[in-house]
Image (cartoon, rainbow, N blue to C red; front, side, top):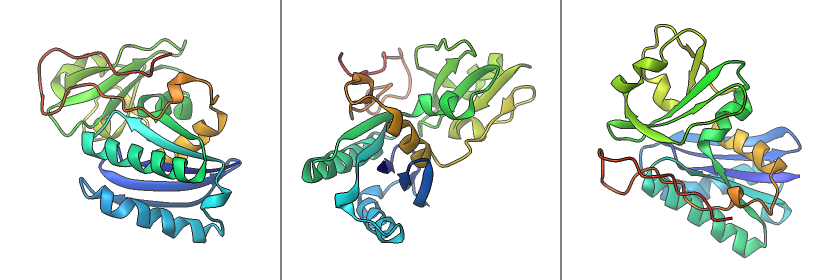
Length: 217
């Protein structure tokens, strides 16, 4: 199965081409904005590098959030447009769920994602598979998670100092991991619809935390 994966939800523009467990090509450029100008050129660059073309794609994966509002819209619009033009199914991946699926820690895991605001996007997972509702928290409010037996991950956690919790980096870029998850996804599962996952309304940095937008069943 050949999958093109797109990630513009973080402070980067990242694409990957994945086939049957192997990353054939990947491009990752750090940029807080401007993904709209670089995304399609990056896709055009990796396809020849893997000696393939658009017509050979079996699936398109795109990370649907949480992340930058503008970045999410750019990635989702590009993935949907390509999927429509090619007749290729598009799968939207939840960034939070990349972490327990990829790291498989034998301990509690706190995923912390940079929101480009004071409050960070967070979600707590347990080894038994339980998970909290996604929430927003300032860095200082996460002190209770800095304890033995806790693992932390994500680009938000990487920028913080942890005294007791263990920071766990991802083994590959998020786009590569998203492709692997999309390969196993059920096309009929509404959780994989390419719909944005927002945790706050635009231009709001504090206040009550709204429930994450999830695809309707």
